[in-house]
Amino acid sequence: METHPKDSNRTYSIRQLSKEFDVTARALRFYEDKGLISPQRKGQTRLYSPRDRARLQLILRGKRLGFSLVEIHEILDLYTPKDHGAAQMRATLHKYRGQIETLKRQREDIDAAIKDMVEGCVWLEGQINELESETSN
DNA sequence: GTTCTCACA
DNA sequence: TGTGAGAA
Image (tube, rainbow, N blue to C red; front, top):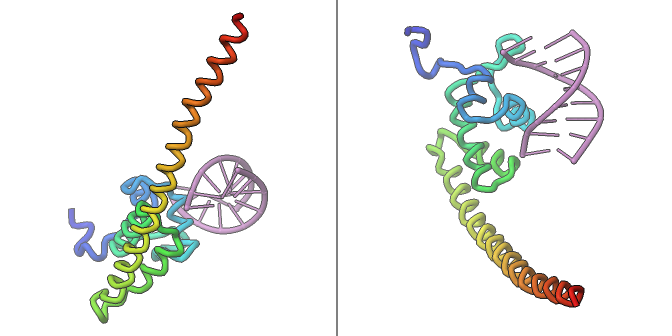
């Protein structure tokens, strides 16, 4: 019960976090290797703080939104308590706006690809029917 | 259980 | 952007 006097002193094992966020422990080490998280160590083993956990949450959200780990890294590192994160928020806003446009363009490309293939299906079916009716004569 | 490194897609 | 294997 009193194992964690303060929430801020809580720690998580790599397994706890990976389970909670449904990512592999391998992935967490990978993020660390890329500099996105820096858990404390007890000897060799990683101890994740609530702040590390919050960072992970932001990393995973960034991924869902389609940002690369490098982009996420850049945004994450912009946080500074000095401005209450204002600089980070500005950067995030800018990133979001850009990503919205990127995704819209991708959607157009996908829609075009689907349209092409739907038409292709119609044409192919016609060709196949033609070939089969010739063969049966 | 966790660590690291190497190879691999 | 990760995974698998193997050794420690």
